[in-house]
Image (cartoon, rainbow over all chains, first blue to last red; front, side, top):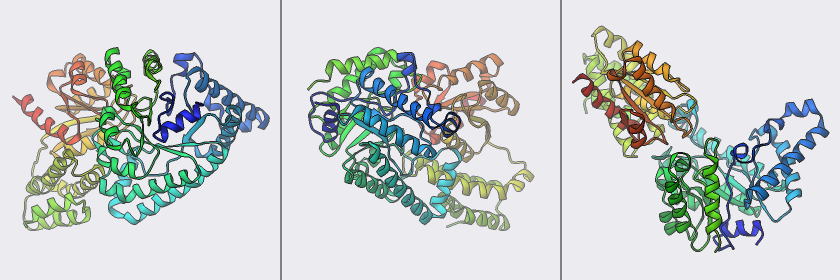
Length: 318
Length: 214
C-alpha cells in the first residue's frame, strides 16, 4: 500500500497493511536529528528583505526538508504541514503546500488546520466569551457562523493547493469535561462543526477532529458531526480507547491515546503499558492511527518518542 | 422566597444587575452587610461551586455567577468595612513560572472568594520567590499554584522549596492543581493539597485553615 492508501484506509475504518502513524506536530527535530528548519524565515518581513526569488528558494528548502523529515526519517504516513499559523501568511503557506505536493506526489497525505469553531478561550477572552453567552447569545451564534464560513472558504483554497486531510483542532475540553455544557455545545459548536466537515467531505478530503480533554460528555455530538476520525483520545482526562472503540468504532476511526504525560514523566514500563493498551484495543478491525495523545512536544524525552516508534514498528502489521 | 435566597438564586443565574439592585434593597431594608454576603452572595457561589464539581454547570456559568457576586460585593464593600468584617482567610494564587495559562487559576480564585477568602492574584508566569514574598507580605495561609503544562509543573516544587528556605513553610498550606497534576505528584514535591477541580480546591483550603489554626 502507498502511504496515502494506508492512511485513508484507516480513516475509512478499513484494515490497511499496517497501522499508520503521524503526529499533528513534531517538535523534537533538534533533539532527535540535531537540526530543524528555522520557521521564522517564513514571514512577510523576510520576503521584503530577501526578495521574491530568494524567498521562493526558502519555501522550496522547507518543502524538501519536511519531505525528508516526515517521509524518510520518521516514516510517517501523513505529512503534518508544520509552519506558522499566521493568517497573514496564507499566501506563503499555500505556495509552500503546492511546492511540497509537487515534490512528494499524490501517494502521500498532507495534513493542515481546518477548524473554524469556538475553542476554549485564553485568558481574558474567556471572560468576554462567558459574558457574551449571557448577554448577547445571538451575537455568539452570528460569530460562530462567520467563523465557520471563513474556515470553509480557507479550506477550499488549501485543498486546491494540495491538502487532503484537515485537522479540526479547536480544543473543547478540560480534563474534567467540556468548557461549555453539552446543551450549549449543541447550539454554538455542533452545527458549525458539522457544516465544516460536510464541506470537507464534499471536496473529497478527510476530516480529523482533535480535542484535548474529557470528550465523553459530548462524544455523541463529536461523532454525529461526521468526521472521519477523532484525535487525541486523551487518557490523562480518562478517555479510554477500549470503550470508545467498542461504542463508536463502527462510526469513526480513532487516532492517538498514547499517554503524553507518561511519555514525559512516567517509567519505561508505564509507557510500554500505555502503548500496548492502545495497540491492543485500537488495532483490531482497522480504523486506528497510532500517535500520541497530543503532539510530540518539546520537553518530551526524545528516547521515549523513539521507544514509542520502535514498539509501533514491532506491532504495526496486520 | 426571602430576599437573601432571591439574591443567591439570581447570582446562580448570573443576573449581575439584578443582584446589585437586590443587595441595595436588602441594605435599605436593614439586613446587615455580613448577612447579605454570607447568606446571599457566598451561599449562591457555594451552590455554583458544588454544581461545578458535579459538572452540572460549566466554566461560563461560573464566570457569570462570579461577575454577579462581584457586582453585589461592590455594593457591600463600604458597609462591610464599617462593620469591621474580616475575611475567612487570605490566599495568594498564581500560575507558575513559564506557564501563561490562567483559566484554572482564575476559577480557583473565584471559588476561594466564594468561600470568603481574600485573594491576592499574582497572575501568570509567577516565579517561586514571588509566591513566597506575597504570602509573607499579606500573611496568607494558602498559596495556590496552577500549571497546565507538563513542562512547567516542576516549577511547583520550586515554590515548596522556596517556602522552606524562607521559613514560612509551617505557616502556609501549599495547594497545587492543573491538568497534568495528580495526588502522587503533589506528595512527591512536598505540597499539601491537590484537588482535581477549583471548587474542591476552595473546600480543601477552608479545611486547611482549621488545621493551621489548631
